[in-house]
Length: 299
Image (cartoon, rainbow, N blue to C red; front, side):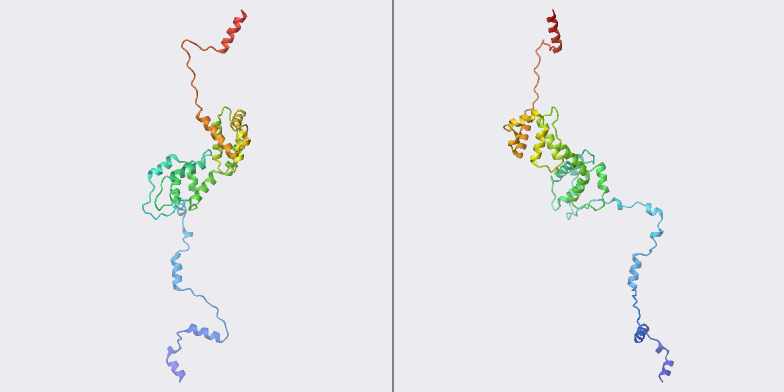
């Protein structure tokens, strides 16, 4: 009866869960079925939406690669965000930087002095809610010109995020080890120039020290270099002012003595006016006067 009933009802042979039935029968026979990871319809749609045409890169023409884009125009400086919507650097400040504090990247320029002058202007104004880094990083590009401006633009985009990083990269570029070595050599071989006053000599020596702030010379060695570099007359004058010899002074006291004597020489270095010649008198050349005397003796 069961067979007849089954033959009369064809739908009874249709298994709605045929896959599950198939697995169950295989397991009952001791056979393993490999696990198959099926990709859902949702994942397929997402992958298709991400790359609708994977061969698009292969189909690009030469004009696509010759087309200019904005990727290379982004700045190397990441300027800090400012919550204050009313933030503004006055145009007068920008003009002041462009006119009085500029750096072209030439070999004879002083990067230390440039940073000092730039920070001096930045410290003249403050804006509520705005950090010093935000102001300095926005203003510094206006202080660069020519090759220095090109150098800043050649740095990787977004590679500078703080003022400390900006100053370090700037000094590394324009104050290389070779320049440091040359300035240290100029300091150690310092000599007073002929006809140079004590004031000019001392100021020139201090300028060499200032141009190389990382010279690493202790005070006693600075005093020794300057003292050995001056001429005999200047050394005698300094020894007399020191009470006989400079060796009895401490390095700090010796520097103070140099400063006092140089300033005193500068303050009293007033050129004297020549006295006017009396009317009717003429200056006689010494050679002509000597020739006249010899002529008289020969008579």
